[in-house]
Length: 117
View (cartoon, rainbow, N blue to C red):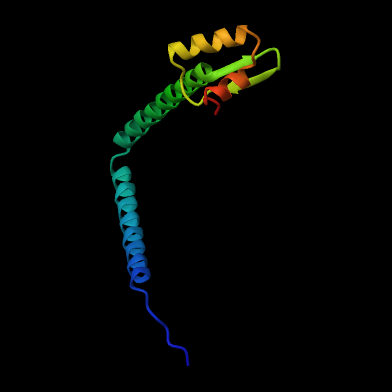
């Protein structure tokens, strides 16, 4: 006959999961009841939340595009894009422009400066 060992950390985790699930169900039921009792306020809050999410998404997309444009360098000689792992400082931009005008590719310049993503 095998003896089963009880691991208390597993038991505590299961209890925590059960308690958390019960809290979530209780909060969802209370929220549903509030929505049924206050439909106008719920619709207003839903509209406000949708507006906030929409504006936040737009701001994030604009920020992400700005970051991408600041860090993307296209080398028409090789037909490749090189992405910097951070925004460049002024002296780095000058050095990169100087070396690029001397005939080096962006890949070799960024690799030397340890800026390649």
